[in-house]
Image (cartoon, rainbow, N blue to C red; front, side, top):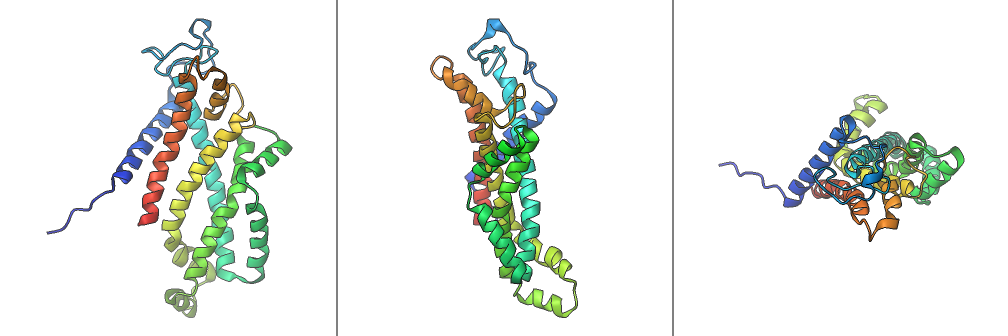
Length: 266
């Protein structure tokens, strides 16, 4: 009798949390209970209620509506950042790891220089030169994330390039590009996917940090980081203003962290 596969509680919890977060993000793209820019002087710092499940901010704006939009903005920026970092990092890591030689030396030294600086610091320098805004944040963080993905992919390609099936493919006259992208790259996916999840979490935190400092998503657009920044004055008089945006950041990171941890164990 075939034994049923047992799923880790952490894996199940990760799927549940991530699923709820994705559902809220998708809902926020198409619907919010209130206009996120509409101010109501009679509802300033209103406590959570049936009308406003997460309360209102210092301008009387519905926090739940702004959280939904803010999660969507954070998700788009983090996803675009990881996409830029992954695609560029895979190409650089694959070619340097497979071919080696002077190409590997030159690109990896450049990679090491970039990698030596914290990603948030590089992003801050980039934004200070080219200005704030969503697209500049995406470009800045995307470039800053390339080195980490390149190093991971390069390490995997160095491991696989000397394996028998790769040597056999070379002897059979298979083109180098086909060996790289068809024979070796799929075998790096388990490690790469865990790295993508971790990279997404780092991008969420980086975007929140930049918006908290006022150089990320700009008003009147909603951002979880900027909401935390605005709420710090009201931590004791209206704690819900900070609790709910902060909780959403924690849950977005926690869900994928649980999934990534399970992926590394397999």
